Every structure is written in structure tokens, then in C-alpha cells.
Amino acid sequence: MATCKALFLAGGAFLALASAAVAADLPPPPPLEPLPPAPAEFSGWYLRGDLGGAINANTPDLGISPNPLIGLPATATNTFYNSTISDSAFGDIGFGYQVNSWFRADVTGEYRGGATLQSLEVVNTQPNQFSDFYRANLSSYIAMVNGYVDLGTWYGVTPYVGAGVGVAYNMLSGMSDNGIASISGAASPAGGYFSSGNKTDFAWALMAGLSFNVTQNLKLDVGYRYLDYGRFTSGTSNCLSGNGFSVANCGGSGNVVSSHNELATNDFRIGLRWMIGDETPYAPPPEQPLVRKY
Image (cartoon, rainbow, N blue to C red):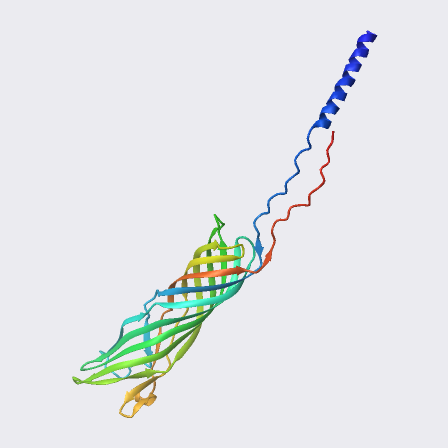
């Protein structure tokens, strides 16, 4: 028995020594590779600029004051025909803040111009009729505060929705009046011009679009916006008579043409956003020395 026990212990010691020798001959494990950096997340300021085209969404509902029907028979009428506002162009610049990966807000200043207002006014009181064709330039300065919700990013494309509120300064300028007065069947030229007028009003907008990652800092925005930006008014009319143009020739007091409804457009715009906020890319932890235990 003593001999068997001695042989067993000797065999165990031999196996332990053999295992240690094999472990010492194994190659060292490969070094640990650091994790790849995660995409940079921006949470900070950005600059933006946009250009676009605007398609008029409302037919202007025009009126004139003082009321030209005062003192005329009850059967007299005053009607505006074919009132239109042409398409226009606009541009804006602004700055904003990316709060997190899904919400951002910005402030923009915008100028829009190139729109033309046209309308024909007819005052009919039998047997007399007075027709005036109006044409004017419409432009606006608009300041907006906007908020956007980014709906996630897929393959570098981020859809978004947004809304904005602000103030619009609408200007009507270069307004001409080409008229014809028909009195008892005899027609004669009439008309004149209006001085420039302006009106400050409330503006609001609803937006949707797509944002594309051009580079890590630069984003391209393509979007649609419905914009309501208030009403407009002309200045005082100066009417034509034998002694030239004057307010006094307009029945003793000047007339003012204005809108009863809101200006509204369907806007299509393209712009760039340059991210200037803090860049916080992922930093892997410092590499630790490899400790082997046998």
C-alpha cells in the first residue's frame, strides 16, 4: 500500500510540472485593440442660410378707403377683379442651438421680394363707370423664432418637422393706377399713383424637410414651409387731373388700398447649416497593461 501511495503522489507531481512547462511554451495572447470612436455628437451653436422660392397661397381680398360709394345711389357697386400676387424669391440667415439629438431651435432674418400685386377695381353707378387697374411691388422683411424636431437619422439623412412665429414688415411700393372714367358714355383717361405704404404684422410658419450630412460639421437642408405673414397696405393716392398729380385731385382726400386677408405662401427652400458647437467624440479608455495569471 505504501508503495502504491508513493507512486500516485509522484505521478501527480509529474503531471503538474508538465502542465507548467506547456503553459510556459504558449505564445502570449494578442494585444487588446481599442474600441473604434463613435460618431461625433454636436450639442451647441450653428449658423444657417437659406434660399428659396415662394408660391402665393391666398387670393388677395382688397379694399379701398374711404369708401367710394359714399354719396352714390344704393344701386352703385365697387368690385375688385382678378386680384393676384405673383411668385417671389427669398433668402434668410440665422443662428441656432442644437439642444440634443432630436431638438434644435434658431432665429432667422429674412428678406423676400420680386412679388407683383395686380388688380382691377370697377365702380359702377349707371350711367357712369370708373375703372382703375392697379399694379405694385410687394416685399417683406421677416424675423422668425423656429423650433425643429429631428426624427432620427438613417444613412446620413434626417427628416424633421418644425414651427415658427415672428414679425413681418410688409411693404407696397411703386403702385400705379391706370384708369378710365366713363361719364354719360364719354370716356377719358384717369388714374395716378400711390405713395409707398407699409404694415407690421404677426407671422407664423409650419415646416417639414430632410437634412443631409455633407461633412461632419456641414448639413444640407431641403424643405417645405407654409408661411402666413400678415396684411399689407398702400400709401395715399395721388390722382391725375389737368394740373398734374395730387392728393387733392382724388375727390378732396387720398385713397388707400389694403388687404382684408393674410398674405400666405408655399415656400420651397434649400440651405446649409454649419455646426460650430462643442464636438464631443467618444474617447476610448487608456490601455491597461496585460496581466497574465497562470
